[in-house]
Length: 545
Image (tube, rainbow, N blue to C red; front, side):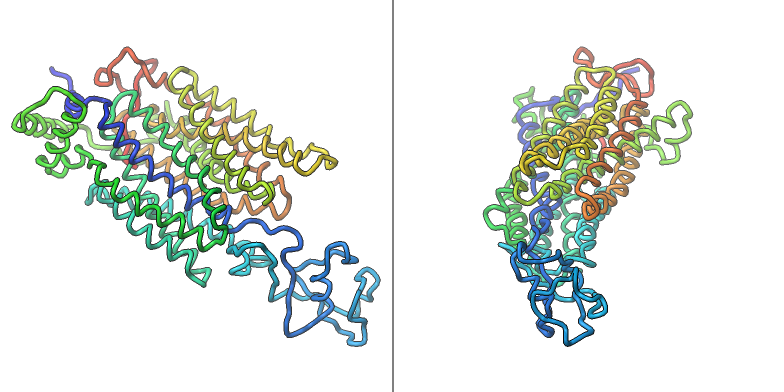
């Protein structure tokens, strides 16, 4: 009996100039996606001491007088979240020392109006996101991440009816308008809603894009393309400080991260649709045109249109007889791998949460070095991705190496508590960044491996549902990341310590995963055995989520 050969890969090749151009063009959609996720670093930076004071124009109280003094003139530090409501009108109105003042002369009540003396307008100054409203900063990021969650699920469902290529361009166009309006509104609730919708569009862009390049690449090249996809996210993170440097005003930042997508639309015309999706929908002629162009572009052996049409129709007929995708509950039926399925879900949840949360936590290290620190985080992500790729290509025990790295990095993240307070501020920030960058590299390494190799755990018919389950679960857990970052209000190092503890847990879970080596350069993909056969070497299958 003849083997089921992948006719499309056989005709266009696993890799060539056509695939290279397409992959790079799709990679670019990760850049604006990173901007929308990480823009809150620069649109809502933590204010410096003395930049905020309670202001009550209707009541020119002693609190206002003191709050406007230079810091060295204030006798006792004042919490700008409250104001003293004087009960004794005969008390002195100037130069009051609260340590000596009779407590019966006043009572503290919440401040309702604030004076901001920042060098530029942020969402904090625009919407009074201080004191009791501070949690709204994290809530705004929650809405963005919720948009990523729902956008990925929606994209998966929409691709049952619309092609990935068309879904990409719709996400681009809508994102341009939604993102621009997010920087122009004067109501914070509407702003959060627009952030949510922009995130939905971004998720549709890169979800559809990954389906396309996973479909047209094969063997080790598909593995490489999936693994390195996240590097363009990191490039977006590295570019973001330059955007904020051009104009740090929050509304202009939103315009500058939204409008460049206009330049992406002409490039979209060079991105092909996925031939397999077209064949599943019976659009054989369109698939023939795409494959004929790819054959010509890659300088492969040309085939006549009739021959292409005949082979694709036959391939479609054979594919319709394949085993249908498994249901979610089937992941838990095999007792041999159920523990690993649990472990991989824990790993996904930890690394996706930490990957985004650690980046957002860069604000905890001060506004003076915010741009430089953000660039350092972006570079560390790239280092982590290439570390993960090295393990994928060269190591059979890749999961154990990655897990051990994260266990070490998670413990290392807590070293900041032992740094002496006598250190110079810049030196201490540098050391704290070091304790944050090592875990970031470890998390990026493991996340890239999960993106690429999760499907190795199960049989082919279960791969799609396993990845879908892991991604949805991880993005649900990701919703906690902004609120972990908000713990900085309690202590500067508390969020990093929590992320470090999670990395340790994720590392332990990762060590429990056992799969064969991903790439065997001596074995063509079409001859690779099923992933569920122990001790064999195989490559990953594409997944469309």
